[in-house]
Image (cartoon, rainbow, N blue to C red):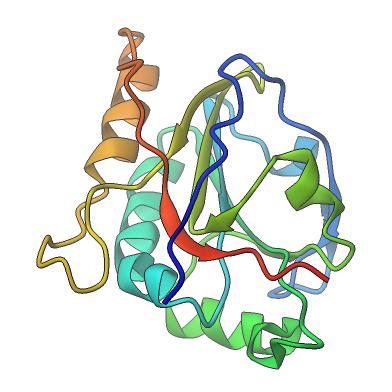
Length: 184
């Protein structure tokens, strides 16, 4: 299992726009269509990564909890499906259904969106405020496959709560660790 860290895009960066197909609905979606009233969580994830599989239940729980509070969630897979066919769009839809994703799961075939976000690994998390300005990036929590720490989503959850309560965010943000994006 490769252990690749996030690139930690500078805070304050404006979310790069995108137009990507949603593997669940078959519709093409833009960032402006998806963004939340109070904030937007963009997650680079994929089907086969053990790091993503480890946190999938928590991702689904957080989305269910915060979407009703004005926070939008979106998953994006940018992996090369020619060399990693388990990440193909039709299998992304199956994963979204089996993992109970309540958010769009978009396919970035060109990998341009991953590059624009400086994504390096799966999972990689970004939280943008209502103006689409980056306020958090990095890990979900300290849990990793095999480290005996149960996944809770505490780091991302704390950032979401700070955003919703208009309180200062912790500026000490740890990079996510996971499988590298499978570049073409």
